[in-house]
Image 1 (cartoon, rainbow, N blue to C red):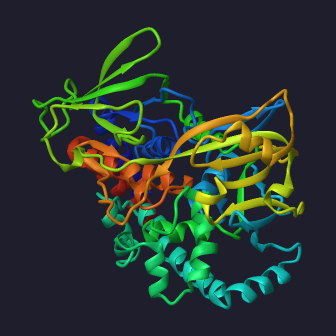
Image 2 (cartoon, one colour; image 1 turned 180 degrees about the vertical axis):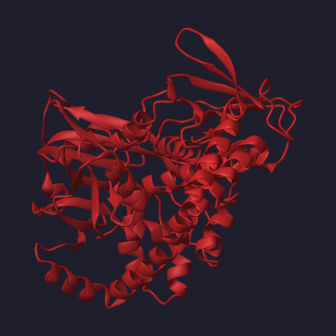
Length: 496
């Protein structure tokens, strides 16, 4: 009885402390970018603050970002990020949380590697025959490469536990090193040199590895070895997507939290209030002012925390001005993104153009300078329905002449539809790893893309900056920190 009375007294004391004293500690957060990175940041910062937070998310285009769909004949098809690896834990968590149904790949499409003259490797309907053909052409290299990549994935999995425990990382180097001290070194050597040094053959590198890089990143084996390994892990693995479209994850995460306000505005400027006192949270003052513009008006609003989950390199069309910030390397966004063209055509492929094998419905190039196309694949709709729609990835726009030779029949009602994407970074061994923290409470999720670009990587980047923002803010706002301490002590006493 006495123990129960003490617990009740503790609860009452916590309520008294909480009432009227925490409201000025409620953070006001701006998130710039409505793709999977922004949605992940918004979701995790909501969870960390236990919804004691106000969030405004700015997206000038469609919610979903590079997770977009294209519509042909009333059916939707994935136009951007289309596949999820079975070991992508965040995407699996999100789909379960939101009650989304996975749409596995049908597995009926056969793939071939094309060099512009012939198919140098073709899958079989029978897995054992495919394995025999792999060993015949490449020896045991594919087996050992698979084991090596599995070991990399095992190390990468450590990031989920680290994030679960509340560890955020200030930069890409620290992020990678936390999983394996050798990972940062992989950014400094090409995938060609890396695999050569490990004893793999030139044939395997020039054909199997190269073809995955061409289709996944529109690039070749001069990319750094970390992204090269990520690319190869997606070949022949258990891959799936979200029924109804992968963008449903983004939409679901943002709709789940009612305190998130979506603003369809372009952010033009982030200004630092140099007079802001970082010693403690001051209710009447904010460190940052975000200037944004909608269709009819422009506004400027103040925030405690600003998170950017959009690329900031100079080759993007909507650049953000940073005003009054210290002139340091954190605000130098070097590098460029690879431009990729995704062309959608409903019709019949001219298989004689590729060598005459009509059983091959997925074509991967290992020599894009000669083949022109990076890949060609037959699609199912986002609902899983089979179709006669093909998606062609290229580095440059397809000409009508090439399209006419590649297809024996084209549905004139839809015609070719082409999307131009700044899809992923242009990778080099000379890339300098970026920072997730640009300023005291200004964060950037996208540097993670320079390690490797994928839906899961962007989601992890969003989570990482959410953890950084939460930890920094709780340390700044002493009232919130004290309240968290009191509630932790209360919980431990109740458990006793």
